[in-house]
Image (cartoon, rainbow, N blue to C red; front, top):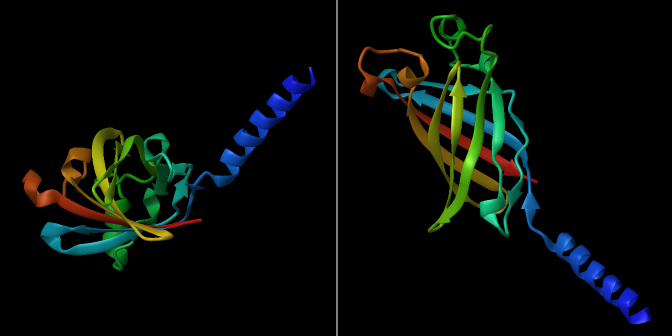
Length: 171
């Protein structure tokens, strides 16, 4: 009986020590910026919220989940911001958040690739974000076409290219 309790105690210590050394981090702060390429219009979103759980020891078990408030779009031009927030573009009154939920996280060479679903307005589409890591900052980039999400800036799809950059500070 004594050896059985010693065994359970030993197993418990091993499990507890694994938890102590697990390399899990969360997103502490984020800067989201974008450029509408055809118009060379740059801007940012704020109001970032995240429920991400990043396991550095086992990236495949990580979850990237976050959102920004669509009404926080800022292009340093008040009239343009007002127009982009209107029903014609982001429709911030009816669609207050832009959301992302990962479906797959993996290492490809030196980069972390995060594939998931991006929802803007009522449209959800798969997208992949490529991250470069430093100690406590991850810089992610991706491209999308705003017209695919019901935001038509120009007539041709290729003229609606948006490049997005995310800088995540990890805790």
